[in-house]
Amino acid sequence: MDSVTGTRHHLFIDGKWTPSDRTELIHVVNPSTEVGLGTVTVATQSDVDRAVEAARRALGPWSSLTNAERAEALERVADALEKRGSEIAESVSRQNGMPIAVLTGLEAGFPPLLLRYYAGLVADQPTVTRRAGLLGGQIDFVRKPMGVVGVIVPWNFPQTLAWMKIAPALATGNVVVVEPSPETVLDSLLIVDALEEAGLPAGVANIVFGDAEVGQAIVGHPGVDRVAFTGSTEVGRSIAQTCGQLLRPVSLELGGKSATVILDDADHRPRRGTTGHRGLRTGEHVSPVLGIGHRTGQPIATADARRHQFRGCPVGSVRHGDRRPHLHGIDGVGCRRCRRRWRGGEHVNTA
Image 1 (cartoon, rainbow, N blue to C red):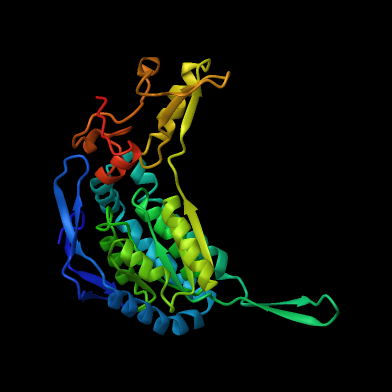
Image 2 (cartoon, rainbow, N blue to C red):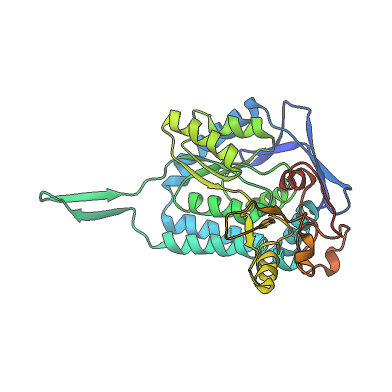
């Protein structure tokens, strides 16, 4: 199977690829060319059950390792990921249209850095620290893992945001069940390759593919002890409600699109800098210029209505097409579904 494109009709559970009970597939499409890249199978509730059960079985042995032993395992995963850096960059670029120049530093380079950082933090950290008690005597402060962590990752930085959650969880003795975004699932195959090469014990990291239903199954699963999510505010609010009812710890990194409103007396140079910087990652980390306002409180005009004021500035989407070999700046605004969401359901090509 090609590591950049391909098909995998199995889920990574308990250290091996296992078939799903479901026949529905996720079709991954190149947003630049709208050509299919591959397919993966969608998990079921029973698949999530199996993944969580595998994680719980692995929790005891993994958390029983010394911090130094877990740190050594993370170093091996970092080495394995580093070997696949160019493949990871190519895979993510084909799936979400992000420039190769950005991917090389972030999606390919940052995950090994994260793994080594957290490995270094825990390697020499004692499990038990003795402290003086408030009312006298001694207190043993014991660091223990929380357990099974459900990790749900968005499509804009699929590798970096995944490892921002996975690396500290594994370093501190936790185990994970990961659901990548449906738009960027194929690079997860390279994660599995790295985990297998590094010899990570079965069940420590499990990956299931799916949609919102699969995410809900992970978030509400009785065997999950903590949830880490990056994504939309709307979904994050729903996850927070579920975790609140379950008294389950949750970390949420929620989005919008970092909207930029420019006053009518603003200098054009900051406008160019703002849109250029925030649009650098092909719309995955974008601040669309939504309006031009007046200090007097008059209504804001849309950027479309006063586009002439932005002539020469990168506003809106730009030319589409498979230009990755020479792409170092802004391309289209990512996947079709998210492009429609950004433009309010209407795609306007400003090329």
